[in-house]
Amino acid sequence: MKMMSLHAIIIGEKAKEPLRYVESAQAVKGKGLEGDRYFYGQGTFNKPQLSQDVREISILPFESLAACNSRLESHLDFLDLRRNLIIKNFDASLLEEKIFSIGTTKFRIVRTCPPCRYLSRLLDEDMMKGLKHIGGYRALIVQSGMISVGDEISY
Image (spheres, rainbow, N blue to C red):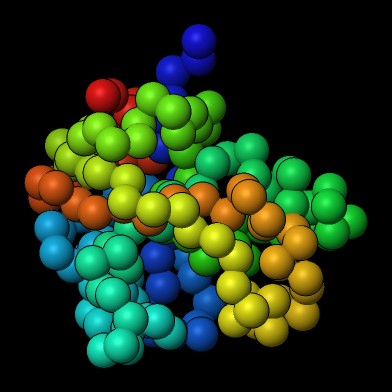
């Protein structure tokens, strides 16, 4: 089995604005990635009626992008999909209901991250079709720490 590793870290400072790649980030328990819109409570889904405990981190398997582009006959980039962490060789069965580490940070997957109509409107693509069953996962930060591109995932 191939080792899971962190392929990319993606953040955006404000809702609806373009995202960017960073080489490393501080992950803070109860808040998210320092520098990201959800860390500052400025994400599109930072609304009182929505559960904020699932807004800390979003994870996308590396392989989901190619599958999405194939379904949509498109050329989207990881930035377009608006997830924080892109993980190569991702295997949810090894991580579900377990605490896992990336760098010095500990995470726990709490639910799937299905596509939404907001993303479809933003990209003018049928993301409900493109990311159906492959939209990724939401995770909580169990222990704050630093993460960097290339870090291996341990569990």
